[in-house]
Image (cartoon, rainbow, N blue to C red; front, top):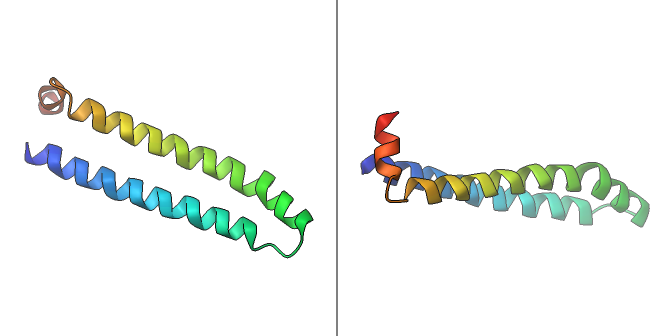
Length: 79
């Protein structure tokens, strides 16, 4: 049970860091000098990195749902 709480806490901290990284990424894109560089930052930086960050966020949420399912504790104990 303690391991479930510890993994949940770590997962929530990673989710919070993920949201901060997304906000930083969008702020970086908006602070470009001209519209052309904003578009370039959007296409070369924001879209690929935000896709990875959102995939990580989705994976963490799925992991937490599986962890707290009725069989989650027994699956965790078997590893």
